[in-house]
Amino acid sequence: MDEQKIINNVLRYILNLLEPINHYPYHNINHTLDVYTRVGYLTDKEWIHGEDRTDLLIAALFHDTGFTVQYTNNEQIGMQIARKYLEKIQYEESRIQKIERLIFATVLFSEAHDFLEGIIQDADLDNLWRKDCFVKTLLVRKELNTIAHMKTPKRKWMEFSYNLIQTYQYRTPTAKWERNETKIINLQRLKNKLSPENK
Image (cartoon, rainbow, N blue to C red):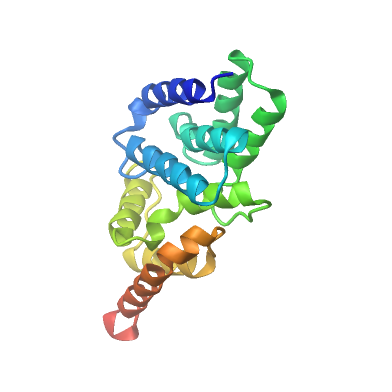
């Protein structure tokens, strides 16, 4: 089995599949490619190779495909989409189950049950600890308002973002090493925005 060829084929399939939702402010093709690239980076840094690396990359590509069907509970739909594709190419059943588990691990506030789940979680939430954090979080809010029709006041959204950044703990040593300083800065900036004098 040519692992790289499988990844390349999945990538082409996903780019076509996500095209109808590429107008989404956040959960679009760029986000999927962002997570896919970060998973590749983290697997290299954390010495994850072979089948585990391939399955992580495939899970990263499929993790938001459920949005093409429905907005809520999209992870379970993404698992079904992945299974249907992987069964068609006669992918090994145990690896399909692993990929399904990795996709489900991207549900917000999920625990990581093993290191592989930790990698995909760190990759999916990576933007929270980058300098473009606030641009990205505002895009999520815009998407919730316009696509999901979930109106969220700006202050409530900042409170949610603060709670998420504060609550989520890095799963991988690489993320801890590279992102901790920016995480502290982002938390302080949000804390300042949420101070009583800014009400």
